[in-house]
Structure formats: C-alpha cells, structure tokens
Amino acid sequence: MLAAYLRREAAPSERIFTENQYAQLCTAFYVVGPLWLYQVMEKVGAPARDFPNLEGQIERLQWSWKPGTRAWLVLAGQPEAPALRQWAQTFPRIDFPKSEGAQLRLLDPALRERALGPR
Image: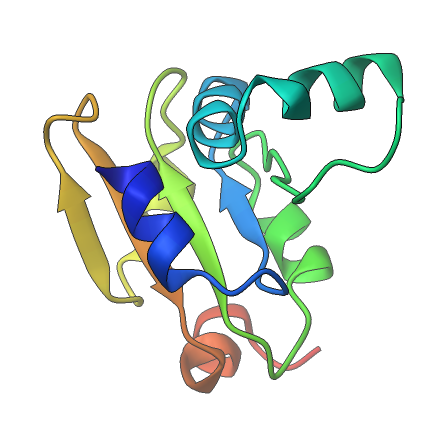
C-alpha cells in the first residue's frame, strides 16, 4: 500500500528519503521494481528514481532536501532512528500498519525552515 501511494502521489521529481537501508531497499523495490537494485549495485544506467538512505541522520536530510521542494520520508524497519522520528513529527504523517508499521511523512517545503532552520 505504501508503494502504491507513493507511485500515485509522489511526482517523479520529488525525492523519497528513507530512514535506513532496509526502508531504502524495500521502498525502491516496491515503487520502482527489482531493476532499481541492479542499476544501483552494478552502476548500469541511471536508476529510475533516487531513494537516499539517511542512515538515521537528520543532517543528511538537511543537506540533501532542496529548499522550496516537496519530498517524502519513509520511516520503517531497523534500525529505528529515534532522533529522526522525533524530528519528523513536524510533518504530516500517513501510517501503513500492514507495511511493518511504516510511516510516511510528507516533507512540506512550507514547514522546512521551522524543522531544519535556515540554511
């Protein structure tokens, strides 16, 4: 359900950030398909979409989420990043309990400065 929602709602230009590698691999597989992993691992062609793994670090998001753009954050799997999850509470949440309790946060650019501070 989470992947179907992202395919429907996330524009191709919008980045989909993930909390950890587990969320990155699962989200990419179900949103794009198995070809994504092959392209990334073998560096064959350009992947259809970018799924940056934040490794639980808010700082990685701060530097890679461009001001004025909408993005998405998938919080799922292990290891959980408590600080990132706490920080993400600023943004609208959509729950996907059947997807191992995943949460999807809409990173609204109007809330960016309040959450990250000026850049």
